[in-house]
Image (cartoon, rainbow, N blue to C red; front, side, top):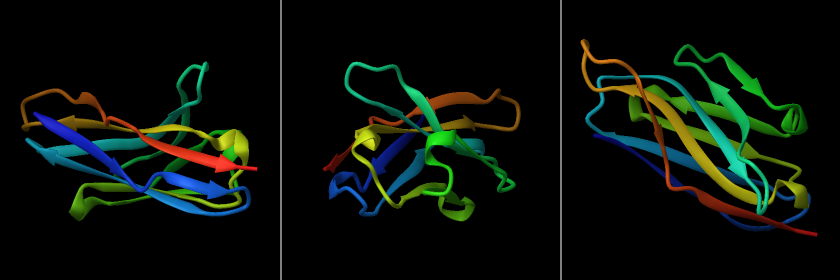
Length: 121
């Protein structure tokens, strides 16, 4: 079984920066796309950014130019650098990855437990 553990959330003032990380561990043969989602209080979970194992990235429009997703395949880690943060970025940020345990098994979607990012005005 693979697990994702996020870290790096916290409280930051508007205009500030924060970097969150997510490490995959456990039974891992390979990892395809990794990504970050967020869920604000009372709202649905939404995609923030994704990155393939080849480095192709995709961002939701509201974070383009402010957030950068990256990954270290050797460390099974994905990062999200968040700059120029706004109060509306406040949410629980969840890591997501498509992982397979062996060459003969299918990719399974795995979620982390989430890390809270709070941006004060």
